[in-house]
Length: 349
Ligand SMILES: C[S@@+](CC[C@H](N)C(=O)[O-])C[C@H]1O[C@@H](n2cnc3c(N)ncnc32)[C@H](O)[C@@H]1O
Image 1 (cartoon, rainbow, N blue to C red):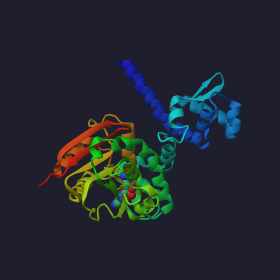
Image 2 (cartoon, protein in one colour):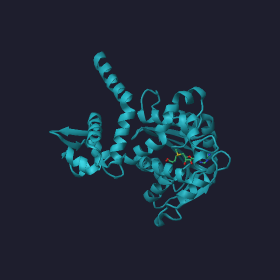
Image 3 (cartoon, rainbow, N blue to C red):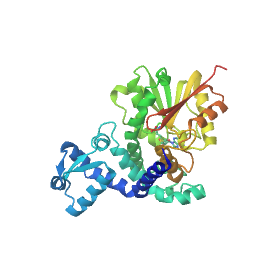
Image 4 (cartoon, protein in one colour):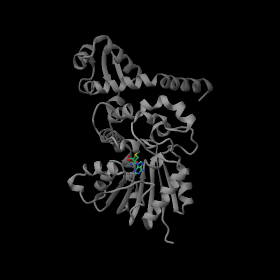
């Protein structure tokens, strides 16, 4: 790429970033109006048809449709509107690959926090937590005192989990595990998918009492007995033992390197010899030069979730696992949705 092309590309990205917050809200508003689904059912709709369906005043609908066309998610041709292929696949349906509920979750739980970024990064504190009443230094502590918001938060994570989990569940490294401990397993989405995928296996979700209580209610009858729950605090309580796999999915991102080494050492104690630790989540590339999902997640973690952590690169997980005495540490990067998996084995001595 020559210098002029390089400038043009970065300038176009700059325009998207500068106008992004407004356009993001146009997209989620279109989701509120079920507009992408309507265009999926009626491709090539005229303005009047969209207006009759949405019942948005004509001028305001004109503004919204222009915004959606500017994003290129909706295409206007001969005064008719159609979903782009991306909108059709990611926004128009409730299919598992839909981003619909993920974006609505980001609107509710993530984006209100980001105006705090300057203050939070300067002070090293997750100052956006002030929007959540109660005690406790993390979003998770605060949510544990507000069951309704906690349930909505975990429900908002589910759709994205369905996008990124298959790369983990299909991974050869996980396929031989018969008894998995899913640390900070949240609503149990991955645990249920794991038990579905491996009918010979059992899985125990370790999380805060308020979370495991909620998650236990959503285990379908055919998985009963194979998806179990263990309530506790990651740092105050010991992990249950006797597992041949310990999974950290999207949980080590939340904490500091020191805390993560503590958690990994506890995982090693929970494992039988030969057992494996799996660190899975959004990972920045080792050179930390790219990764939009990783960058957004890292900011969210520091501004709101815990005031620490990041989408650490795989090399960090490798270094921690080697430090605590894991053998045969392997990293698998470039998994879909900027995900990475690092696996360490408990030696026999
Ligand atoms: C980002 S969520 C990850 C959920 C799930 N593993 C996934 O992949 O979607 C982090 C989880 O850590 C749990 N958590 C945070 N602090 C905790 C603590 N001190 N003790 C137990 N669980 C904790 C939260 O309740 C939440 O379910």
